[in-house]
Length: 118
Image (cartoon, rainbow, N blue to C red; front, top):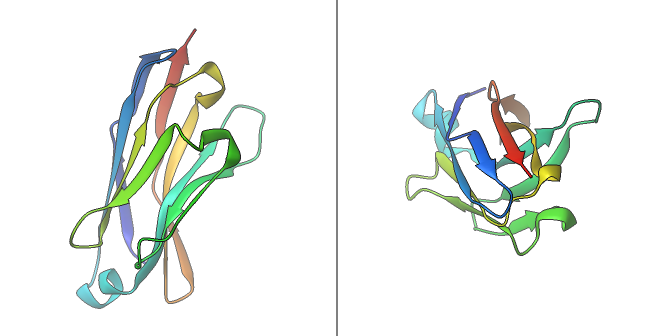
């Protein structure tokens, strides 16, 4: 497994933007094998849900609820992932978790709180 550290959460007004970042650390062999990386979120009283994922080949997948508003990208080294969140609304309020898979094993970050005020 790798270790994931998120940053960039916080408070935003409805219609505003936030950018989340996640950096993976661990052995070079595991870092090079990360595929995919992504973001999940969990709102109070709800199950954790996929927000967006990106593969080594830059193939992306988004939840329907965020398509056209959120953009996922990877850093050049392949061990960082970003989530640009625009046009935020109250339904985006949740704890956002960074995710990665390496050699079939899933890793999760500690989570970062995103709160959108209406």
